[in-house]
Image 1 (cartoon, rainbow, N blue to C red):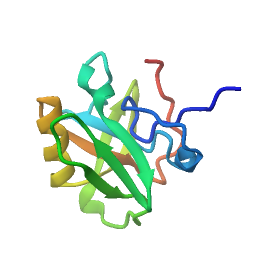
Image 2: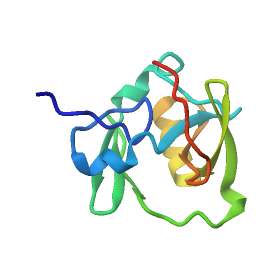
Image 3: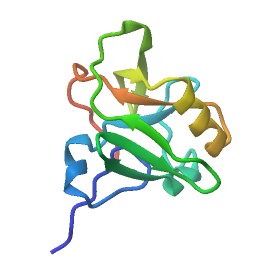
Image 4: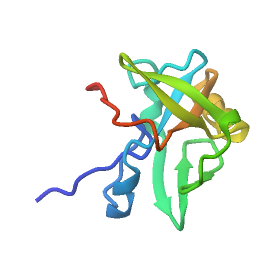
Length: 129
């Protein structure tokens, strides 16, 4: 029997921890135009290790300090709301802020942002990678 893998950040490293199941594909990395970055656009995404620990989404990557983002934050600030393109869908997302954007941009070598699927966005149809 194989352990299912969960990917809290779509296209980044997966984990077998069942505590990560409720957070599977809740976050994604987007470029400046709001398009979802996949390994075909940026190979280094797979080098980002993701953990769910003590109420935080924890990211680690070679040469980078660890980055922690709170898991369950209430999205009531429309100033951080954006649109992201996932395949042919346009989905409401919440921007995780400048620190996360700087971390991902530095590691991936291109301007990008970490965003979370808005809880009211509805079902996301994730394309095959």
